[in-house]
Amino acid sequence: MVALENFGSLKHFLPECLLMGGALLVLVLDMVWGARRRALYPWLGVGVLALAGLAALPGAGLRGEGLALFEQMFTLDGFTRVFRLFFVLVGALTLLMAARSRELRGAGGEFTGLTLIVVLGMILMAGAGNLVMAYLAMETVSLLSYTLVGSLRGNRRSHEAGLKYVIFGGVASGAMLYGFSWLFGLTGTLDLAAMGEAFRAGAAQPLPVFLALVLILVGLGFKMAAAPFHMWCPDVYEGAPVAVTAFLSVGPKAAGFALTLRILYTALAEPTGSGWLPIAGLPWPTLIAVMAVATMFIGNLSALWQDNLKRLMAYSSIAHAGYLLAGLVLLTPAGVTAIVFYLFAYLIMNFGAFMVIAAVAEESGSGGIDGIRGLWRRRPFLAVMMLIFLISLTGLPPAFGFIGKFYLFAALIEGGWLWLALLGLLNSVISLGYYMRIARVMLIDGTEDAAPAPTGAAPAPVLHPATGPAGVAAPAATPALSPLSVAIVGVLGVLTVLLGIYWEPLRLFAERGLALP
Image: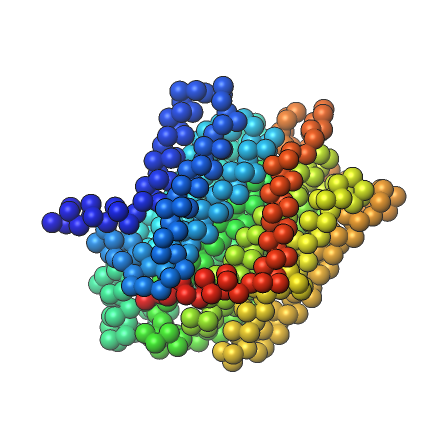
């Protein structure tokens, strides 16, 4: 009977089956074809993601009862359906970047196959209904992300970044697993819904629950790149291929927030959606608010001093994790909707910025901020698009990022967290310093204003290994900017402006679809 029920669950699991089957197909073709058709693999991956996205469309953005699949291991509700589409879009943009990347020219089909499996793992994180599923999904994402970071063969910087990611990730995963074991011991169940019922019935004392949640927060904070678990982020982002950096800055971060929301909202929120259960113990909202403020300030203040674009964007990513953490303080439907709405804004503007950075790096061979100096004269289209993305990342109107922050801060003010919203606004002002610094350098014509490098400083690393390890040599020839790159950057730029003017359909999609139990 159980086997038949699990078999019946497969009809609701079609997008995930397509992702797994597509990944296996690409890996098998890579073994059969080898390097002969290497350029084809990312496009196969994009095709698989397109099919998975089409299969995920029915029911997305609609309210309805959630389905408990595979003996309550996976929950298919509006929340999962929205994140299905989100992660499919993240994977497609990553593979489109990889298709034109000189860095990943030698990666072969394993890069595409692993990316598809990571997308599957992120969806499972969003839909986890059981602590075992949550841990297995997170480890799937983590282990394969380590491999993607270190995927540049012969590049010491990439391998070093992968090793650092493994070390930090292993410690974080161990702490989270220990926290899960505490929750199991306190409630006698691994099912999140049953755990919530046990907590509401007063089955555990606040202090042990608090200690368990602290351990879990170590693992989830690592995924979200939230302070004080952010130390890995700048080095890993700098050493990874640009496409992987863009992927890490959005995909696993969003998956971490999705799993955090799933656990907190299912097991530790009031059934009416009015906030935290008293069993959560101690001032959890205040603790997360302090963590959010620290993350915002560390990210924004550290970014002011960065000369490498990928390190700068790493600290920017940390700061945006702080804004998103502020939404967790509420643990209400308004807070959840604001977080997911902001994640969609961050997906579009951040991938757009990284695509411009990748195009400029391919052209100049430098990852330093001076690589974009005078971009307005060389590539006016890219300069205009980058300016749009920077305005959106800062949170200025009429860009999509402004609307995302508006709803996030409005939810905080409505929930009685005015001081947290004001600190978020202050951090947005601080971020103007480094975002507009990029814009200023980009719009300067020529190199006469270039700041001299500090004595003894190493040159900015080359972002591709075409002629050897990073920082050794620049490519011999500069390829023309591909029409595909121009088209994708243009579409993302148009969406950034369009959704900053007419955002209501996406807001309604998020609000109607994000019905958590």
